[in-house]
Structure formats: structure tokens, C-alpha cells
Image (cartoon, rainbow, N blue to C red):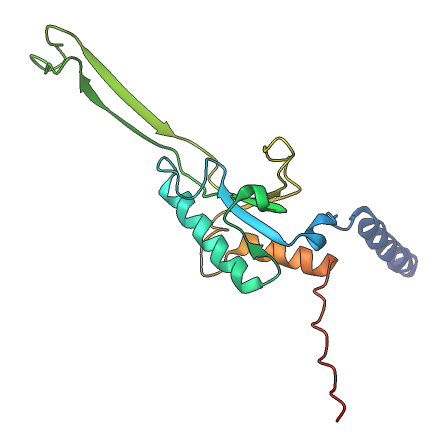
Length: 191
């Protein structure tokens, strides 16, 4: 009886592993990643020099650009319209908020909780978003807007230098699907 169970398990385990391997489809990497030459990097909430851009997103843009330059597969462009690919980033955020009192018409409140003669106003702000860093690759459509993401990943601290892990994952997927072509060997000069 024990021998029969052992034989059955020996036959079933490889079959189960084979079925599991069949279910996993290879990651599809769009052909444009192998053909693209120019890349632009921006944050989901705006471009690098937008004064309203979150400082963490501004840093993430710079760190992705620096890491891209060491990859040497794509050329950075300063114009979104010239880019074959647009990398969009967003640093993860814990929930944060701020609040305060803003007097109306320059009046201060007369006492705790009592408004002045012209009333008072409150001011509340918040920045809520995913806690994980976001990295996605899009294209610019003819109307100037971005396509839906062609490749997207999230990860806690995935945009933190010196290892920008989300970019490394993108590099690995692109280089595996579209290996870089070696530089042509120099031709020998005949005397």
C-alpha cells in the first residue's frame, strides 16, 4: 500500500508542477519598448519644475532620470512631445493632512472659538494616496495626452536611490524581451 502511494505521488507531483508552469504566461513586453529611442520622465501630478509638485515626486523624477542615464538604452528628452515613451512616477505617501484658521477680512477671533465681527474661515488640506511607489510607462497620443500604461509596477520604496528597483525591473523585462544589440566591430583597414 505504501509503495502504491509513493508511486502515485511520484507521478502526480511532476504533473501538477507542469500544469502550474503552463498557467504562468510569459510577461508580454510591448514591441515599442524595443524600438523606442527617446524617453521623458514626469510625475503623475505634473512635470518636474511644476511649483505645485510634491517634493518627493520631484526627487523621484530626478532619481529615475539618473538611473536611466546609466542604462544607456534610451536618450532622455526635455520635451514630452518628442518622447517615444513617457515614464510616470509617484512616490508612495502615507496619509497626511493639515488644517488651520484663516481669518476673513484680516480680523482675528475675539476669543477661543468665537469669530470676530466679520466671521472666520477654516482651511483644511490633505494629501492621500497609495503607500507604495508607482512606476508606469506610457506613450503620448496624437492629442498630447498619455495612453493607458503599457507597463506598470508598484512597490514600497521602489523609487529610492541608489537602487531604483522599479526601474531595474523595467530594464530587466525590456532587455530580456529585446536584448541590446552589440556595437558593430570596427572594420579593419587594409594597408
